[in-house]
Length: 198
Image (cartoon, rainbow, N blue to C red; front, side):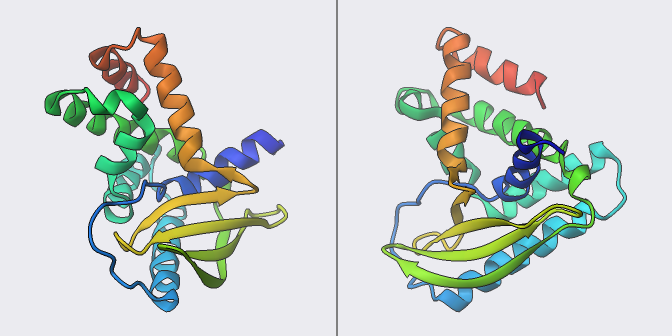
């Protein structure tokens, strides 16, 4: 597996949880709670990967995991960038649904290469309004990779993942805003393109 493929697999494993910070009151999240949350997320992902299901069934399951562990309205809005401020509610709703399907297939399509691998949580530390959970992602037959899961003190969910120094949330924003530019800034065309890739 080359470095790019390896990163794609690992980012897929982590990317199901990437989301922007939520507004609202803080939950006073403890480090133990954040660790428990990440362990639960990792276990669900590993269970899906090793289930023996078809690709189509896995993609459907990954959509469920996105809904469970990520605030898709927020992550979709962050990925869209400034255009989210002027988009209609209808356009945002359609785009968010398409974006969720796009992420599920984008990362789910590479999960087959991670069969037999796991995520090993090592500890946590508090940083401003988040708890950073440190872990090691271990693909089968590959060397371990350092991963940081940032769990929001506001939402209680993971809002970002840093994999080998790569910020996955901002990576998605770069890709989606570039795709929007390619569609001439049209939300409907962006949504249609994401559906094609789902």
